Amino acid sequence: MRITEIRERTYPIASPIANAYIDFSKMTLSLVAIKTDVIRDGKPVVGYGFNSNGRYGQGALMRERFIPRLMEAEPASLLNDAGDNLDPHKIWAAMFRNEKPGGHGERSVAIGTIDMAVWDATAKIAGKPLFQYLAESHGRTANPKVFVYAAGGYYYPGKDNSKLKDEMKGYLDRGYTVVKMKIGGVPLKDDLGRIEAVLGMLPSGCRLAVDANGRFDTRTAIDYARALSAYDLFWYEEAGDPLDYELQAALAQHYAKPMATGENLFSHQDARNLIRYGGMRKDIDWLQFDCALSYGLVEYLRTLEMLKSYGWSASRCIPHGGHQMSLAIAAGLGLGGNESYPDLFQPFGGFPDSVRVENGHVTLPPLPGIGFEGKADLYKVMSELSA
Image 1: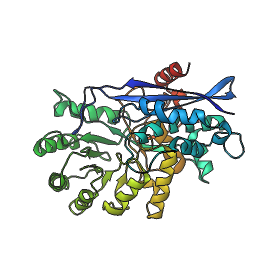
Image 2: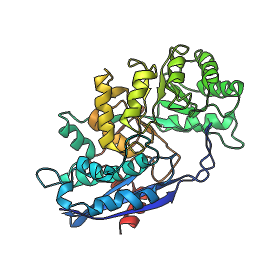
Image 3: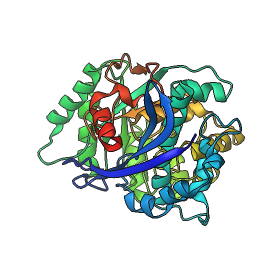
Image 4: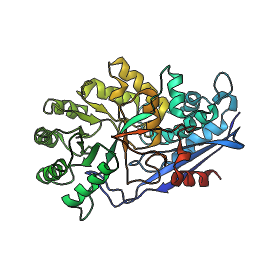
């Protein structure tokens, strides 16, 4: 058993939208296919992975460091002890060989993308959905029903409050009960008008989250916190720079309602510093670490262990990214849910074609691996890469 080839390609996911910090007019991602010599249903098993939006493709790092290290490794050194499957932890260690600690940068995205493909292949070789494979590996019972929320509410030219409300209504019509919109791209007064427009059209039982994408300094973050306290929001997300733990801790003194952050922390060490110094509250706040950006599931498992040691439940984790990998982790390891981009970053976002959102939840089908093959437009792109 061995990995026979690893392919990568950069794909555009450009869109004329913007949050408070960046626009997505030139956004890209990397897609990876890992071929093996294992045959299932008459074909070699291929694992697929890609990185989440917001960090661009990472092909150069993969080609120069991480793919060569795997292809040069002794094949048996990448297998589990029984020799009947890949070992994602050993593969991760092989990729990270000769890398200094700290300063994680873009390498966490490159490794996380390859790691996703590794887990997809591993579960396929085992003949199981990844969520089931993870649950069994950790002595849990898988729950294929996962909470999801609809992320949108971006800024773009000509988008007034009427169009914002139409967008949010579209998400509600598709079965979502929690929707999210961007803030921080216009003055506070204008953002409050946008928020009130959405809150005014939400039916009973539905909630709104807001996301500043790290835009604010401490004073502005607190000004928003005081204004937002008047509303019953699902959460106030990433007010300041993701590494400014002092800002986050100060914000907790001015905002008593739920906050969320963590999507731009790319290692378990950075996640630990958030827990130690960021003033996050384990009973009401939410953590958004995204495995596809932060060295993959191998590192995410370390993060979950760290959280447990600090008394946090995995159910307080709702990952960023809107991809099926985090859905599988949520179903297999008991996370609190997952982000979803119903209309953006296609074909990489979304669910298998048979899946529908019902009362804010989706139920994952029993497809082998992560389940990419169940999404026709995505699998078309993936199969072209691996052909």
